[in-house]
Image 1 (tube, rainbow, N blue to C red):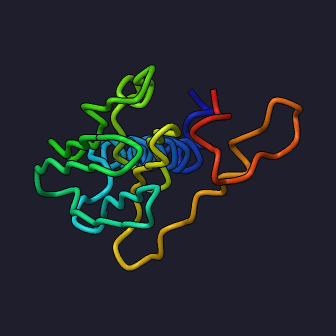
Image 2 (cartoon, rainbow, N blue to C red):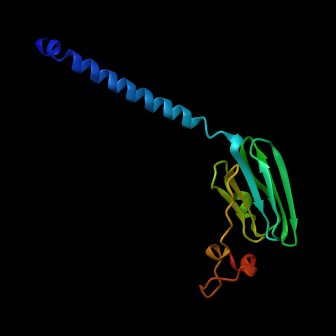
Image 3 (cartoon, one colour):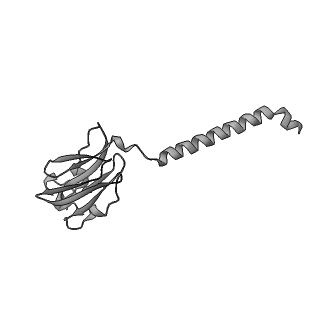
Length: 151
């Protein structure tokens, strides 16, 4: 009992610090689960023929792309983006998970089409096609043949 009386101020200060830290972690965890504000995020879709379209992540929308390489449909719904249709041989792009955060991408290599999310006002990146395509001999393929060599 004597110990508690002599160190009461220290014990109370320690409990207060622990409570403040616990509250901070809970607040940060709660805010993190609320997600990033969608108002500043845009979807940019680049096609293999040099076209680029932009749409807000806030508004549900369906974007259809028909190029000489094929057809893709990109769907924006509930703050996420996914490739819902593609007439490429394997349809791998339609099997990718929906994206919703800046920096995430969905790529359809046969159609040279990619979707990316960026913060509004930032410039979109350019896909480095030599980084994702290699010829049969292991050397970097020309960007003209991405749809043929990226398997």
